Structures are given as C-alpha cells and as structure tokens.
Amino acid sequence: MSRFPAYVVTMLALDLLGMSLAAGVLPPALRTYGFGATLLLAPLAAYWLIYREGFERLSLGRLLGRESDDE
Image (cartoon, rainbow, N blue to C red):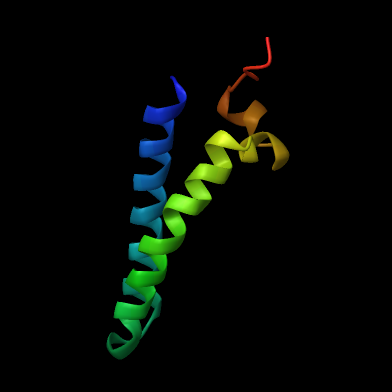
C-alpha cells in the first residue's frame, strides 16, 4: 500500500478509536471537547505513524508486515 492510502486508513482508524473512547469515557458535557481533540490530533498522529516511520519506531512495523521504503 502506498503512503497516502495508508495515511487515510490510519487517520480514519484513529478517528474511530478516539470518537469511541470519547463517547464511552467522557461525560456528555465534555464529549464535544473529546471529539474536537480527536479531530485535531488524529491527522497529526497518522502523519507521524505513516510518513515519519512511527510504526517502526514503536516496533510495530514487523507485526504489521511493513517493510522499509529505503530500498
């Protein structure tokens, strides 16, 4: 998978995870802040994971079957 589709999929997965956590953990009065934080931080985290080799730095690259693009 090239980098941009991987970025989009990772961002959507992080959005889903963040929204689920915010809806399940935060009280109703604070959910808007949790949703906003998720929408702001998910693209940044996805960028770091995909373009800055964050999966490899976290030693998750081998578990996900990703190879380095340095070849």
